[in-house]
Length: 194
Image (cartoon, rainbow, N blue to C red):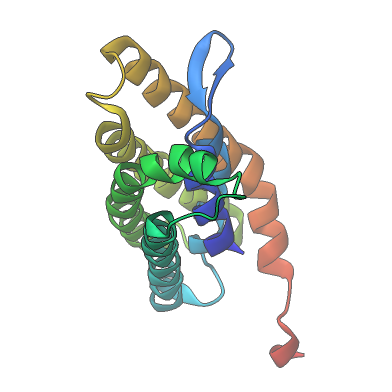
């Protein structure tokens, strides 16, 4: 599920929206929910890193496939080529920013979460681990992604607005709203353990 959100978020990030007077990208709010997958209490750091690499590979494959798709000569009856070029023509720079930000921030999230788990091991401290690791890794993710994807393409004011709104959205969605879901997920017993 996280891999699908990652790929769709890279398409949706091309749409600029306005939230509370700040320019934002639609896809970044969706992408932020991926961090819920890597704050893994049940299976640990090794399995969380596997999830990071699966997400990375799906993003890479989607980007490569769509670049090949754009190279095919469209039929005279085709009506989608220009739309695909508009969306996926932007994707290489967005994908590069996303890939670099994804790997660095997800690994950072896993490492910080594991470190905080040693400092705050009780079940009641999950919110500290979840919010602490996400707050730092989302800041890193947002800085790397928005810089590679948009710096130089958009004005500095718009880039800064996107950076701020993206960080706020991702932190709110993932940490604040996501923490109760993290507690619920901790209580679910996988089928193979029943």
